[in-house]
Amino acid sequence: MATSSPRSMPRFSQFVALFLLFGFAITSRAGDPPLTLDYYKSSCPSVLEIVRKEMECAVLSNPRNAALIIRLHFHDCFVQGCDGSVLLDDTITLQGEKKAPTNINSLGGFRIIDRIKTMLESECPGVVSCADILTVAARDATLLVGGPYWDVPLGRKDSRTASYELAAANLPTADESLPSIISKFLYQGLSVTDTVALAGAHTVGMARCANFRARIYGDFEATSGKSPASEANLGHLRSICPSIGGGDNNIAPMDRVTPDLFDNSVYQLLQQGEGLLSSDQEMYSSILALQTRGIVKKYAADQIAFFEQFSESMVRMGNITNPESSVNGEVRKNCRFINTWAPEI
Ligand code: HEM
Ligand SMILES: *[C@@H]1O[C@H](CO)[C@@H](O)[C@H](O)[C@H]1NC(C)=O
Image 1 (spheres, rainbow, N blue to C red):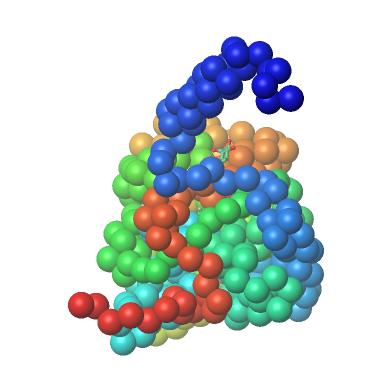
Image 2: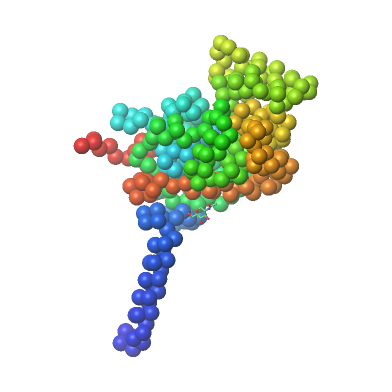
């Protein structure tokens, strides 16, 4: 066989190999392997089923859990990429992100991720990264409260670091201006459309008084007008959130119409000027909202358009990688701690 094969064959295959290498080199950054849909197909075929089951239990017991997980994924991806950094606890040698201004007294869902991790460690030990678990869980959370489905590219690695500083710098806040928020999304490689669509996640979940006080004692009346319904809403919000003297952690739904349902009603609220967060309302009402206002209107009128864009934007957000973790990352055994502890020399 070997002696009778045509002489040109080895050369041809060398050429093909060179071409493939070259092609690979220009389409994929070294050490930054692309995510794939079937990443765990042979190493952990039941991964999607296990995550789904745990998420079903969690969301059934409390729909708020869906919101917590969706937000956790966002706060993971905007800090060093989607690498599970947000899940790390503070230790003597590692300052985590959990106490960063946007996260403290605010993030939740960690125990749900722990439960999923425990299940997966008994099913396929050391295989599924915490970053991937969180990404799939956020998709399932969305679906379980009535939102769209999308396929989740997988293959992230968990970081061996976290960054309090980047958490403080990269994550947007409720009182931030629209241009500043948009610039934080652009910095992550996301577009203005992605920004408006992803903020639609506020169709589920709650905000704390500290994050909407300035809004309800500020320009709420100016944007909402004085219809009896919006006045009643405002009165209710103010009763939850006093102008002075505490109540910082009292909560109200960002979508008061359907707080536990993933739909487009939060955009309709923005159109009525009744957005709970200033950051959301700005997307419709700011004089700088030239581009975003039209997008809000579109999603308020067309839930399918919102769902399609949200799915695509969630994949794009989930694609934000940590090049450092792709090379030096690991699959954590416990999502709260890195695997090995080695003293700095
Ligand atoms: C556009 C910029 C954004 C700003 C300024 C922002 C800000 C906030 C704030 C202030 C809260 C309330 C937190 C609290 O009071 O404890 C919140 C909650 C939430 N955010 Fe965002 N967010 C933004 C984008 C996003 C994105 C991109 C997602 C996900 C795709 C998201 C998902 C959520 C969810 C689900 C909640 C409810 C969490 C809960 O129920 O505890 N947000 N956000
Ligand atoms: C996300 O990444 C995967 C592979 O890494 C790629 O196939 C896909 O097109 C990306 N999707 C978006 C919306 O950027």
